[in-house]
Length: 450
Ligand SMILES: [Zn+2]
Image 1 (tube, protein in one colour):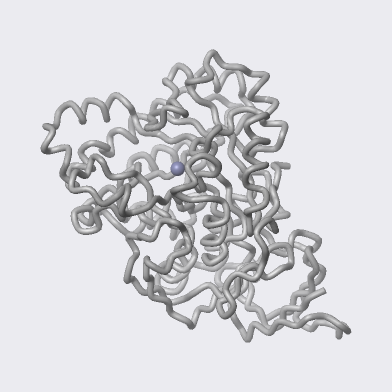
Image 2: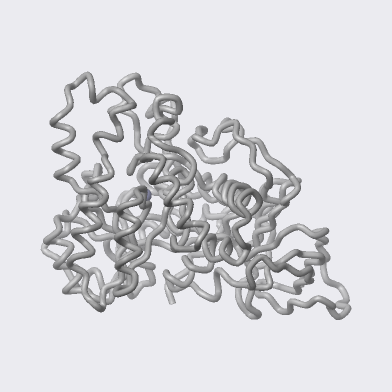
């Protein structure tokens, strides 16, 4: 048993906090302002540091197995632990085999089980390669405990082809109860944009946002919102534009729709692309000032459901450092920086309430994906997953020191007002700001949807 003393926690009411002690083993046993004396427990004195439910990143690409030269489960979960993340949800598309059926799921689990430092849940996926739709195969995978199914309206991966809008309608009507996570950018609009630019124009970083315009996201979101029915559950991943977010927010009144956005959309715009180059190139690409402003307002007002990183790194030299921007790999490794960024920029700088911050960094994702209250809460008898943040200790980003295999970041050389002090998963300290990683690979467990 362990006892954390002097932890500053949310009371659940706006920005109110209180100092408490937490008694726990792998589960939370007691939270109290005046703890009883417990003999023989390890005491950790947080001296007033902020303790929040272990943070969740519901959208990562750890690429394992299959694309391990970009990231694997050990490097990815190491970076996550450094970043205060206690649970990740890994995407099905960037591994070989992709997680599209039960056998593939177990191949993946076998490959990653001994590497994870923190807990992980998994997305399943539905791809064009598997059409006509095999209901049985998909339901079997769903029943194994994946948290939802990712699908694309446009894809750059041969091993994970995009669905047409007709395919998506088929999925929605034949498998109404599934939670679908959708990458929404219209393929036609993007192909037409590609055709409209010359070879030389395609090479320029500043044309990136012309190739993947706001309209592509708007069109795909609109087409999907038009066909969803009462029983459907839709989650739009990495929303990057004001207009798409507005449409989803309107639809929320009638349907079970949620969306996420990512730190890069809250901090950068297309004006930054020529300067940041490969560091900021991902899909969707960052948009304009009005989009950034609107997404930030969604965060401040708690209208966006949660924030994810869409973490996808690579070897910068081999896959990012091209003069021809069209050849540059799409992806940013963001997991180590999301929590310091969000708490620095929004909690400390913009005074967003702690209650809202917790919803955006763990509670809402946990509820959406069937992991609550075990994850994303400080309820008694649930997993003792904690993120400890030192709100008095600033931290300057040095991309070379990141723990992902990809050593680059659009946040390079930015200073955050706070830093991660400890990452605790099921009662064990995985990361500590003084000692670094202090757990063995394989400690992280697969968490199934409830
Ligand atoms: Zn992604």
